[in-house]
Image 1 (cartoon, rainbow over the protein chains, first blue to last red):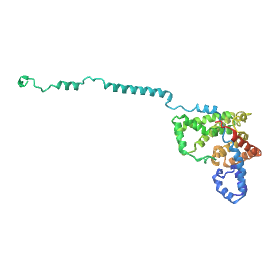
Image 2 (cartoon, chains in turn orange, brown; image 1 turned 180 degrees about the vertical axis):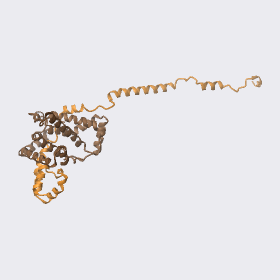
Image 3 (cartoon, each protein chain N blue to C red; image 1 turned 45 degrees about the vertical axis):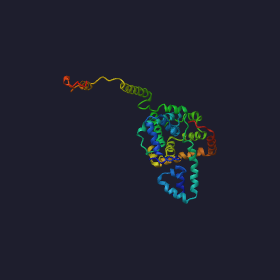
Image 4 (cartoon, helix red, strand yellow; image 1 turned 60 degrees about the vertical axis):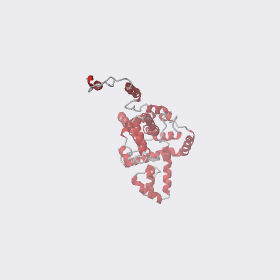
Amino acid sequence: MDRKRFEDLAEIWGGELSRWPDAFRADADTFLRAEPAAADILSDASELDDLLETARHADGSELLAHRIMRSFPKPAFDADWRRPAMAAAAALVIGMAGGFAGGAFVPAPFSDETSIEYADAFDGLEEDWSALDWSDA
Amino acid sequence: MPRPPHGTHPVDYEADAALMRRIASGDKTAGRELMERSLGQVLAIGRRILRDPVEAEDVAQDTFIRAWKAAPDWQPGQAKLESWMCRIATNLCLDRLRKKREALMESPPELRDGAVTAVDALIASETGLCVMAAIAALPERQRLALELCHFQDYSNIEAADKLEISVDALESLLARGRRKLKAKLMPQREELMSSLSEAAGSTPEVM
């Protein structure tokens, strides 16, 4: 690479070798180390780069930010209706749990199995009371 | 892959991925965070390419809508989030220019009188405004070459491909564009840079 080519590339790609195309960078770096004037060429090109950087960002107004945020997609499950739905479901669960817990304090009717046990309670007892010795009575 | 953006911090791909996951789950705060991070760059792209602040705002809004919708499909490690946003904005701007060209069958409309100064003067630094106006005065192809290669860090091959021209033609556009900017801006460089320093010390952030 000669000085003319180095100057041309600096004019095209600016003052930072890292931004030059890969194909030229190694040669340019070699030239930069060998040629004292090369640093000045890059420095001159960097002056325009610095000015261009002032146009990299633009300030947006609050109004624009607000307008953009209004476009934010709503989630599939919108919290506006999910919240009351969740509250209703919670009330239902709590009500059912309370109902079951309260039921423990109410005497339960005998089930069939309990009735049979109760009826069998006297099975096997002697029915012929005459055979008993009542002398000690 | 785009080259690493100029003058930016090391890329934290995991943080970007986490932010996109939050956006995908409908976290509006995360959406705002992305907007605050990249609105300045996205808006500037629209202003530089389209030269119309109103259209630039439309493109900015469209860019964020697309980014938010694409959040569930975000591929961590493929690109820096801001660079990706800038690419969306650039493509939207190029689409608009293409459509205008097709609609008018002629070159894109010239900069509306005072379009930049009327709106931007209120919100941009004097230096940035002056540079923006100098860029806006470039012919369209030179402006696009500068946008892609200087501001968007496209490689020469990528930019040439995007503009459907040869690499030699791209470099010619860049050289001519930068030469014009140099001729216009360098005589007032000292004044512009000192104005920038003063503004940095006194101008509050609008965003």
